[in-house]
Amino acid sequence: MRNQVVSSNVNQIYQIKDGGLSCLVSNAGSDSMTNPDTLSGYIRWCAEHFPANRNELILWDHGGGSISGYGYDEKYPSSGSMSLSGINKALKSGGVTFDFIGFDACLMATMENALMLTQYGDYLIASEETEPGGVGWYYTNWLTKLSKNTSMSTLEIGRQIADDFVNVCNEKCRGQQTTLSVIDLAELEATRPDALTAFSQSTGKLIQNKEYQTVSNARNQAREFARSVGIDQVDLVHLAKNMGTSEGQKLASVLQDAVKYNLTSSNMTNAYGIAIYFPYKKISSVDKMVRTYEEIGMDEEYTRCIKQFASLEVGGQAAAGGTGSPLPSLLGDLMNGGQGESHMISQLLENLLSGDVSAISGLTGSNTGFLDGRMIQDSTQYLTDNHFDESRLLWEENDKGTPVISLKEEQWDLIQTLELNVFYDDGEGYIDLGLDNVYDFDEDGNLMGDYDHTWLAVNGQPVAYYFLDETDDGENYCINGRVPAMLNGERVNLILTFDNEHPKGYVAGAQADYDEETTDTVARGLTEIKPGDKLDFLCDYYIYDGDFQDSYYLGETMAAGDSLTVSNVDVGDGEVQATYRFTDIYDRHYWTPAME
Image (cartoon, rainbow, N blue to C red):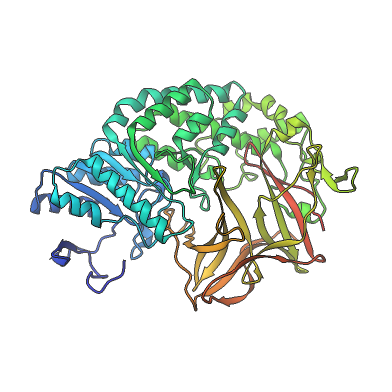
């Protein structure tokens, strides 16, 4: 929030009084706002100078969920975020118990956060999903009602906050997915331990009993939050139900009882109010999460469960061999893939167990502490039997002359997602135009290769578009995708939305896209694109010799007008190639031979 009152040089404390801001402390130092001591100092000051029978704490800013925690101070970017253990330290030092602890920030309605907060508050009020930018909570109604009735129950306050937040977001932030829940921390603490332990043990047994595919499918189908940044945070109730076990159903019931109020926008489904970290997209973060679990006292069985799952996922990726890149497909060389023989898979797994993680994206020698070598070794036969055979990705003509790819049912069962991937050959390499969930099957269940040479464009400029998620309740649908770009020199993702009212799509706004060296937290919601804003579109670029760039400029700088138009444009025949990307149960990618 920008204003001409609050200093940008030092920390200050203000009181809202008589409709204005009254400065109580003009210089409270200049430490980072993500330093736990800054928060605890503020809590102690308030308790001393404004003692009260009821206290509420709200943390406003960026949020990163369970992995990275809360906050990002632009003045002190190197200080990072305040981790859950940091929040724990601050609240313990603060010495105050709160009616509710609220996060007017993204992604903080998590089991891990709630578990850590049980000793400091009665309720947690937070969002599972990213919060829309420029809006946040609507404070007027609940504060007005509380001032008139200081005995207003905390649950009633929470309901008012959630109702106002979602309603205002629906009015002012079209297309943005919104969630807010009110969680009873005491009930969660009383009922959660046995249910979560039993669920973790039963899920671990599925993995050990050669049913990794069941767990992977449950995880893949669970409602995932902040998909554009891949923090691996999913709705725990949905995940538990998907697992198909009695322990999962019991945990889901316990959680839904503890979530006393939960409200979402109409374009959000399967968000029941409390999320959890479950690795899948970014295995490189598992060690960091395990350390956080040790610091906050997370259920040991759950920690063991995610380590087992991540270990077998890495084993499956290692067993696949190859490059995990589209380049061999584009160059007509698929010899790197299709490692189907058992002795080859055994050798690849031996390489992994000896410390060679070079084939696994994001892993180095410093972030593989979670790997369970014995489990991977004992699962060699399972990985061999449940291995996608890339060599079967060959185009053949069906009886109508259409190119198709035919796979056996057991091979299709290993595939979780299928996406069209389009490239433009500029004479030196391949411009990646992104991934969309567009595909068709013939009457025999074969994938059809009938790409029509069109792609998404903004104001007529083809852009790199990546499908994110789809919600369809039978009456209404909403599809979201992202377009990497630079907005006035800052890296963002333009969010494109397609729904009943806008079947051709529109640009909902821009979301800040921080690199991992800056912060792991997620910026609040979307920034509106205004007339005169400068846009440069970005894409991935593969040079023929294998070099890769992830920030290649696509087209000329565009000055935004009164509106941005989304359309499908013909990208031509000649230099355009299309392939389909298959993703298996281990989150390993495979590409079909390119279609010109």
